[in-house]
Amino acid sequence: MGRSRTRSKSPKRRHKNKHSHKRSKSRDRNAHNKHREKSRERSAKSRKRSHTESSSSSSDLSDEGTRTNHVRKRYNDRKMDEVERLAEMERQRRQRELEQKMVEEETAKRIEELVKKRVEEELEKRKEEIEAEEEERKKREELEAIMAENNRKIEEAQKKLLANAPVVLSQTAQDGEIEVRISAEERLAMVEEQRKMEEERQRLKKEQEKRVKEEQKKILGKNNSRPKLSFSLKPAVS
Image (cartoon, rainbow, N blue to C red):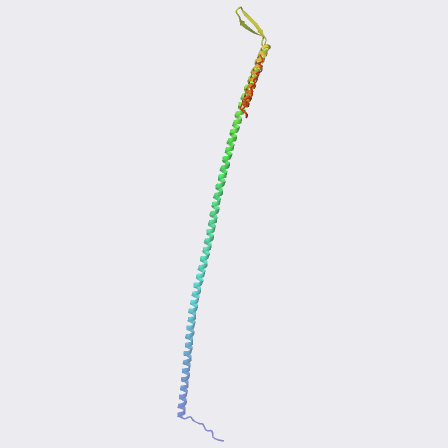
């Protein structure tokens, strides 16, 4: 059986291994430090980028808010303008309605005044006509009453004449008084005869005036001829 031989490290080799281990640890420490620095740099860059993005986002949000406010302001302005325009249109419409109502009321008032005036004129005219008719009626009634009274008096006189005794008329003469007795019937007959004579005289007078007018018309005719004039009067009844 062979003898195992253990190799013992020499001090030089141990020193070499020690230095090698130190260098390895130093390299690891340096690598770790570099890694930490890179991590810090990345973190710083990330924070910077995040801050930049945040600033940019804030700026964008601010711009967006400004634009939104501007749009909202313009919308509100347009809305206010529309409201004011509608309010002005409504005011003008009410003003036109008020003016039209005033015109209609004034027209109706004038028409009412004209109608009232016309009615008053017609009533006044009718009143005058009624008063004239009433006055004429009164005059006619008065005339009829006078005529009736005259007729009544005439009838009463006739009755008295017929009822009285014969009237004695006295006439004074040189050689004495002559008494003439005349009855009531004879006196009435004389009055009636006188009335007839008066009526005939008036009739003849009217006929004569009529003939004179006709002859004057003939004289003033178209041919300027003067026809012979003939006047004939009926003898008066005595």
